[in-house]
Length: 310
Image (cartoon, rainbow, N blue to C red; front, side, top):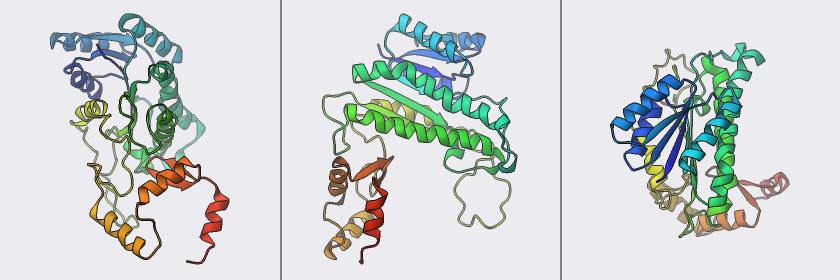
């Protein structure tokens, strides 16, 4: 039976993820610092017919996380899915001009260092087994900054950046040069999602950021996030782990992309098969991949091409 370990399990997002995976036959191991609440959550899941247990571990105390994962492996065996979504409301936010080491370092230790230490508990086993899923949940401020929560945003952005680097680091184990999943392999999936719980996060990017805006409304928790987590794990063979330029959410080329490439190809500006060209350049080491974006690996080459007449 497959095993999912949920770090930061609570009565909201954590238990809903546990329920979504548990109904599909997963054994659920929940990790949090309050053992009594964990026991209550696990009892509720077992009443629904889901094999679940709680293991005490505090993100702020790395040794307890190591001990919790040791107990999980001894009881259930290898961990197939790791979901990281802790939150600590006692770590207060600080405005942009009020950020200092005293209120920034605890955020970094909790979110970024906590994720790094947690992933280390499963990464080596997943690489050896050539199978695994790592799901990281962070705040919306990692993409859309909220000035009143600047210290939290810094930690969330660092966590998102590290997660994308982790994805690129694990790619070679299961993904071909074209960026597609190799048939016959259970691929890695490293995904970062927006928690959508930070108070004050805007509903959408503003078209006119220079205009004075009213205080943004808090975003409600996304009730569909647990099920999207499950779909990402179950369908990782069929879908890319990141959305590439020119593709819509279903993975098909958009009309605007096809028209633009065709037009520029006729003017001899772009090759006809642009994505194959970019993938080949990446394989040869001319480009590097940063999430879904290609960049020149060498700044000198970029400067040289930019100086050429068009």
